[in-house]
Image (cartoon, rainbow, N blue to C red; front, side):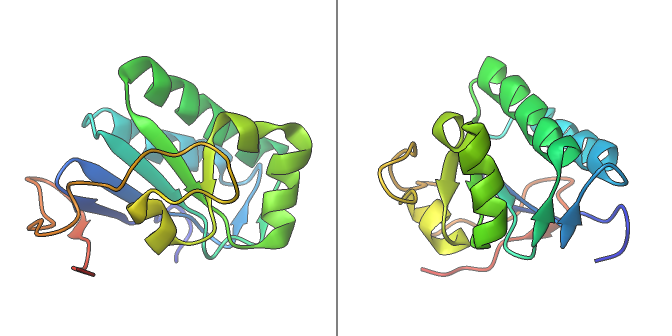
Length: 145
């Protein structure tokens, strides 16, 4: 993934934003801008897919927290996919994992199965049978049904 390139995939009103391997002071602002631009399109659920992320510093956590606050104010559920133990640990130590729903995989996030007993809703109803596209979206989600 090139610097500043954070692909977005849509399934109805569910958006998934792919994060880079490292989230730090060098790219946190661009990531926040991308998340806010997706939130401007009023998704019901925004999934921040950190599957490829192996490092996240305080600037990255701040970007995620600011996006969460905007999402919460707009009634959008924000979910974090964090399979890397080092990334999960910084969110656990800071308590952000108790504020924002965390998931061990994208599939679990789409199904609404949070890590442990943390936050998370029911299954994403826009996923099965969705065309996976919306006007002006970056790319569709693949159909896993």
